[in-house]
Length: 236
Image 1 (cartoon, helix red, strand yellow):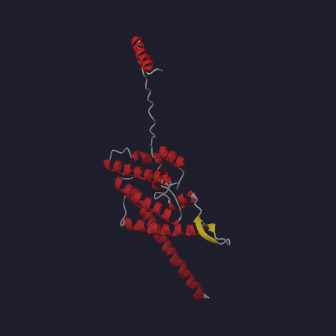
Image 2 (cartoon, rainbow, N blue to C red):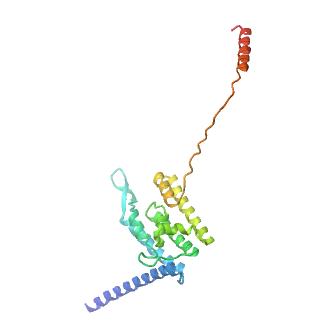
Image 3 (cartoon, one colour):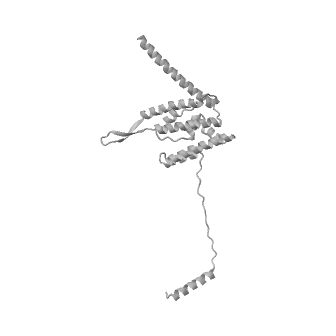
């Protein structure tokens, strides 16, 4: 019995060590985005992404529902039930937890964070289902408000403005593409782009054309007389 307990204790200890390593890895990742100090950042991101992809696959398997059946009533095709709130909170947790001091990002950090964010968006679309990116979700991912994210677009740093313009363009383009393909609703997509991406729909210019003609009575009578003479020649 004692040997069995020892084995169980060893397994528990190993599991706790692994969880501790993962937590340390997450803390280092968070530290980079708050303080800009971390070693081997890209490898840390890859490790965290790999962990999240495993969770996505598990989520898809747990939420798989039959959507097509054969003539005998046996399911032949499945689809994953998508819950946007669960996906947002489970796979896009803030890299800078709510409650800590608001992080200040530079252009390089925003760029790395956005690449990481879009990688996760891609993985969700591959393993779970259609899930468009949004500026609000990216702001949440960074641990800042949408208004703070928008202010980066007006930064005095030209590199920051350039990165933000690319982010706005990419998120806007992907939403419009998914809308045009019928993957997401067009009306709600346009509303989201207007409210978040600050896209303004150009209104049609009203053009009023006024025709003004000065009538020459003598000239009209002359034309009528010629027309009458032409009809008389034709015998009408």
